[in-house]
Length: 104
Image 1 (spheres, rainbow, N blue to C red):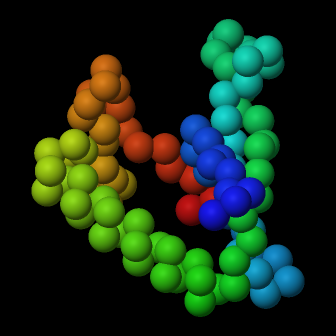
Image 2 (image 1 turned 180 degrees about the vertical axis):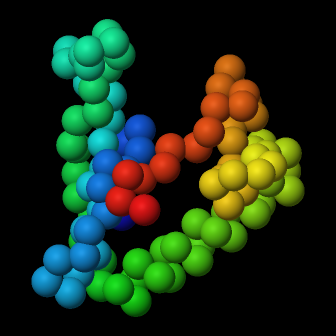
């Protein structure tokens, strides 16, 4: 697969439906820009554009992966609020909630 590139992102900044297509903005922590509390700001890196059917297939695949991560003990479902949003339990980030889009 010549020309294939890996894209790294720290998360999703925004998901929108525009012109009948789902647009997912990938963001990464800035090396230079800081917020008012001195933490790195999130900067736009790449955009994924999908038809709604492709987005739904992707969403289903992500749900399946979350279940596998829970079953493997790599993440835990938080009890109570936010509909059981998973939390990461490895690599020094135990108990930290998974990022949640401000759009929902």
